[in-house]
Length: 263
Image (cartoon, rainbow, N blue to C red; front, side):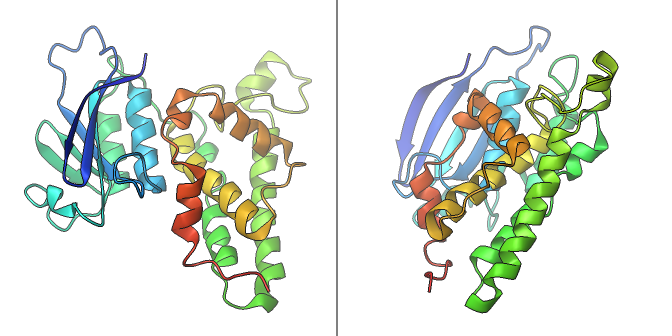
C-alpha cells in the first residue's frame, strides 16, 4: 500500500515519507531519500522524466523512502552539503549521495535485489530498446524553428511510434508458448504484464510526447496505434505511473518557451 506521511517543509522543498511494507527478511531498512524537481508551486511533483523514472523504480522495489521535491528556482542549495552542483534527481542511500539517473538505477537494482526486492530487469533485451528513439525525434519535431521541416520531422516521429506499436503488438515468446496461435499480444507493458526498468524509462517520455504534441500541434499519438494506447492505458491504472506523473499543465508550461507557435 502506498501512502505519504510525515510531511515537513522548508524553504523551497517538501519531503514526504513513502510508507511501503519493507521485505520481511530485510533486517536493517536502508535509509533512502530521493530528491526530485518540484512543480511550479514549489511542492508537488514537477516535470522531469528522469525524476519520474527513479520515483517509479523505488515504488516498484517496495521499500520505504523519503521523497523530497526541490524548487529549482529557490532551493538548489538544499543539495550543497552532500551533492554540490548536482542535477536532479539525486539519491541519498544511507547518507551516501548518488547522482546520474542511470548510475542510480543500476545501484538500486544491485542493492535492492532478490529475494528481498523484485528484480526489474526486463526478461527480453529488446524491451530495453523499444521506443528508444521516440523522445529524440519528438524533441526535433516540437522544437523545430523552421515550419517547412515540420512535415518531415513529424513523419520521422510517427515512424518511431509505429515501430514501438509493432513491438507492443507482436506476441512475446512466453505468450506464444501459452498460445501458439496468438496473432496480437495482449500484454500490458513492454516486457509482459509487470512494469520493468524499460517501462520506467519510456513511459514518462511517452506521456510527455502525448501531452505536448496534443496541446501544441493538435496531433497526439494516433489512436490507431492500438498497441501504444493499450500500453499507456495499462500504465495509467498503476499507482507507480499514476502517482509519479506531473500534472499535464506542468508539462505544457515546461515546453512553452521552446515550442514554436503554429504558423
